[in-house]
Amino acid sequence: MLGAGSGFGIGVPGEETDTFITNMHVVGDPETGKLCDKVYIMLDDEAVKMEDGGGSWIPDYDHMIACEIVYATGGYPDFAIIRAERKMEGRIALPLLPSEEMQRSDTVYALGFPGNGDGVNGYTYQAADVEDVIVTKGTISRFTVWENGSVDTKIIQHEAHINHGNSGGPLITEDGAVIGINTYGFGGQEASEYSASVYIDYAIEKLDELGIYYELQGENQKAGSTGIYRWLVIAAGIVVIAALVIVFQKKRAASAPQPQPAPVPKPLEDSGYRLQGVAGVFAGKRFAVEAGGCLRLGRDASKNKLVYPAGTKGISSMHCELYFRGGQVYLRDMGSSYGTFLKGRRIPPNQEIPVHRGDTFYLADPGQSFVLDRKR
Image (cartoon, rainbow, N blue to C red; front, side, top):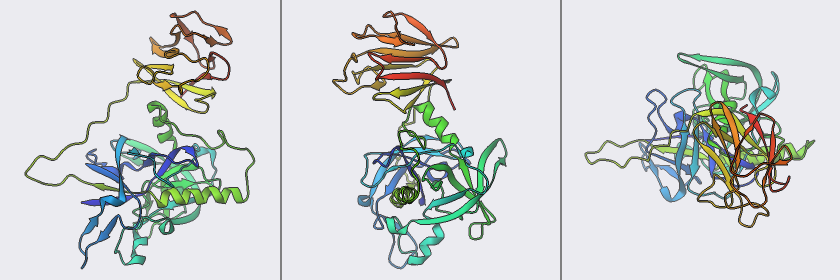
């Protein structure tokens, strides 16, 4: 049994990526929390076609890329993070922007593959080419809460029409930043008067916890870019969505046991602190400081979580580590050659030194610096 939805890439804006966000209900059943056996990204219009005479969709896996589900909510706020087995040409990342940075009446665009749009081709294939993406324009009506039982979800209510198939696609600003995940409409699938997009903030918080890289609008980007640049960014968004119809295959009924996907490791408890890169290799990146875990920094990929490229000047194979214990964050130098400096002063090796919110430290020189922050 096949189903489909949309999605968008995250990472360095404008660069190819292998990491994407979509709705949980695109890759699983929100009522039971069961995830699909297989998830793919369709590459073109040849990926899924209707069999001759109609009746069944026939997938061609040579025109798809397999993905793993990195994280998925059990239900609401209804989002998932997936990772493709490789980066793909034309699948670029978009910048993110906390939802309430926008205001009522601001213009927004919904990008994706609404199911009713496939009627144009006679429902003979699942659209996936760049030319098939549908863009709808509207304004933000209000910021509100969707009350749905045990979980109340913050949503953006807007007039950019979405339909089944849009699920998981981005709601973007005129500058091309993602502020919401298109999820459902009010008034039925064919005549929804208003559309609803889940706050992107939910995904931002989880990306921080998992240490998955993304960029906010304005980070590492030129300030004051307007005019045609905005439309170029939106066009880039169209490209990524056009290439990102997500198809899942549910578990098939069979007498023989079916292989099951490996379980997603449960994240460690979140301490509420984030390590923010200020300068150097990790500038602009944020990493969760987990209770019971350790953020170790250095050049040895087998021993560090934050791995510097080989030959990075001044960085030892195991340089320093950051960890949370008893309500306090600590920094420890691992006996590095060129030292770890907290607030400008070199700390003694192999001693745990308390670090507080707003404290800055660097490895070897200020060109590789960080600041301790709280999660957004």
